[in-house]
Length: 164
Image 1 (tube, rainbow, N blue to C red):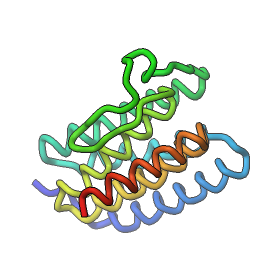
Image 2: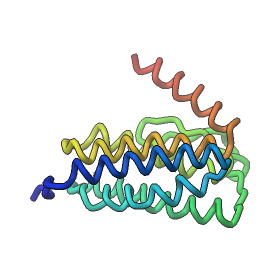
Image 3: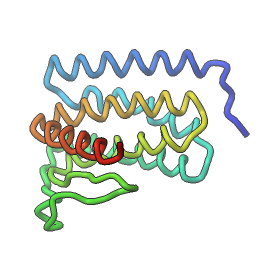
Image 4: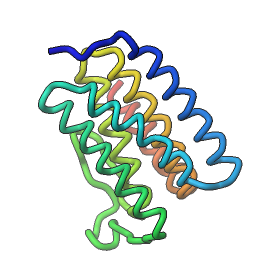
């Protein structure tokens, strides 16, 4: 059964404002923990709003990745997944994801899952929440590793051009 939408627009608007403020504060203070922590309510509401089996799994996965990212950044865990696996990229749901620092991988996967949600869900509020998460995930990547962000943007542009 569809979730009630009576207050959904107001909640999504508030979460959008919070995300915007968190990104600005994160950039001003060069602190990725700000958008990570302030994105948690959005991810929780996304889990609540999703209903299908695959979309529910994607939203729960995003929340799990967000909590993992909080852990990685807070404890400054620096683990190079590319070196460990012996390859620089991997494919997930048709998207090529660059491997490297685990602090960049988590928000990269969140971005992919948010794109999956935007394309696989019919709910406008679920899409709205996924868009908030997508934009904030890119901001987190930039705050954690500006070079990794640049590499990811190049990869995203290349992948996008291939799909045209």
